[in-house]
Image 1 (cartoon, rainbow, N blue to C red):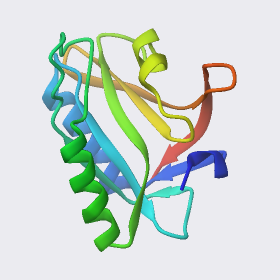
Image 2: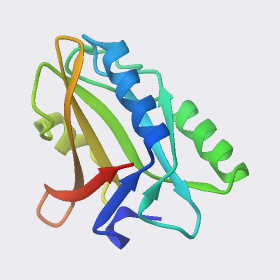
Image 3: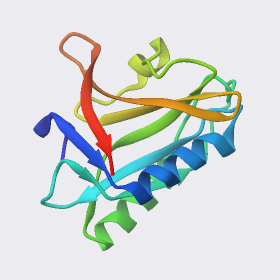
Length: 145
């Protein structure tokens, strides 16, 4: 499933709260995780899976999900009837706008939720999708609850 099939996404309250808490707890480093939805029901994120930021670069400004952990999440999701629709990460003390690094490492067709965490407190989140055609992100409507 690719998020290009939906122009609007909703994340359930439990998953939203888990993701926001993960972002605040990981401050001042960037944290990251995987967004999951029920197979056959696009547009509704029902589970988030926090993963370790394994970057060898500056973890305050970069994140990396290990291929092994991503494969583990994918297998677990399949066993639970879920599919990966995208990823989330924080921008500590910065707005939730895609960075140049985000642009260079994005995969087309996936949803990217970026959370702004200021001084350890969640501020706001915005959803994005990357297009390889013009190498730019476009904002996607999303809400929680």
